[in-house]
Image (cartoon, rainbow, N blue to C red):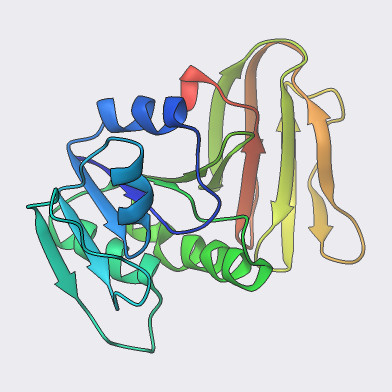
Length: 209
């Protein structure tokens, strides 16, 4: 089952949201994400959160779940619901933008839940971002932008092929060396690594939808 979670961060374009809604089986709005969805004409199956941002509207007759647990943020609440429903392929929109602290927390949530998902991806109007397994491959056209980020602070043993600037068993570490602004040479991009949590970011592609 494919689940879409819409958060209360920077609003995604209606076109992007519509694309993801059309491909999901279960649509969850995390708190104020419900406001964004309804404003753009999309109706979630469920709105969940502590409801400090969601503003009830008469036009929504779906399920609203109040979870006042302050140890988890609204994205975590939505993630747990999706997993309880049996979803293992989850896309997240609206998780970045308005506040840096919220954006960083939501990136941490990716690392928290990635091992429980077959595919866990965060997207906005610019990028697709996902935690990748220790062996990962995707077909990308020549010149397609790719960045790697060591979400765990340090990721070791990274080897890549299909990128303009390849890595050979190397380490990325915050504050020392990053993997931003690489590009595909055309064909299959392959990435392996041995230790850590690695984020893969790229411009939008059908290959990751």
